[in-house]
Length: 260
Ligand SMILES: [Zn+2]
Image (cartoon, rainbow, N blue to C red; front, side):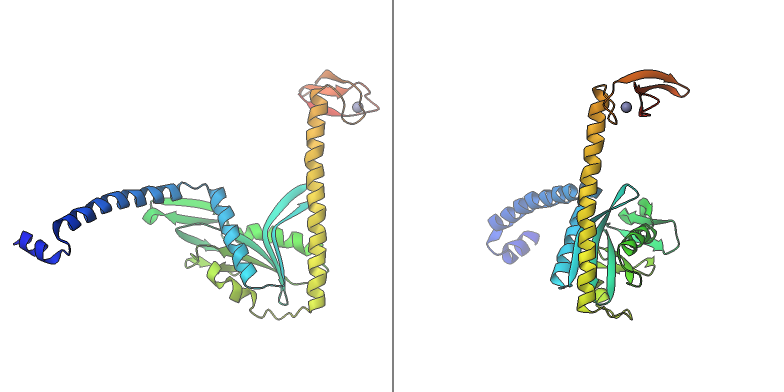
């Protein structure tokens, strides 16, 4: 009965069915392997990809001012802001989150939770709304008083259903949110001024970041060669209250020290 059914219903008959089964046997394991490979991506790679997706969305949405990977130096610490958008509604400081699974979070929680594999895996991460507030304050310092600066956390995988917080958007909503009226209306001239201030800050941050790296490298090389990076004198080993250290031979005129 079964063989009768098969021989009647399979177009091309048995050879076709066998070929189909073999094809499935090859394709299914290949797909599984591909998915596994995808899952092995590091969180850094995932983050980069997320930033790239947001960058493309912003580019397509035709915003007048877009800054990607905005670096700034504050109190000697360099910070990286994923994106800054400037339009007539103000300045938007954007933090990108490319996390899969379900995300649970509220505005005033210290940590949010990512739930994966039907609840079997739970990862905590620092509340991105709080994280981005620091960035917003840094950007405010670069701009004239009164310029509205908004915080936006963009979830690239659009999994915002379980998040209760203002300033959190799914990537699919981002262009619409950027164009929502905020009660402010910056003129084309103001937008241009803000963009040039940001561009200047960005250029300065690049220089000071490079200088900082160069200084650290130079100092390390000098100390390794036994030379004081501050005055060029010889370094000598000394025994201090907190253990041995290198001091400059010109002490007390030069007070350079370095822990051993
Ligand atoms: Zn010295």
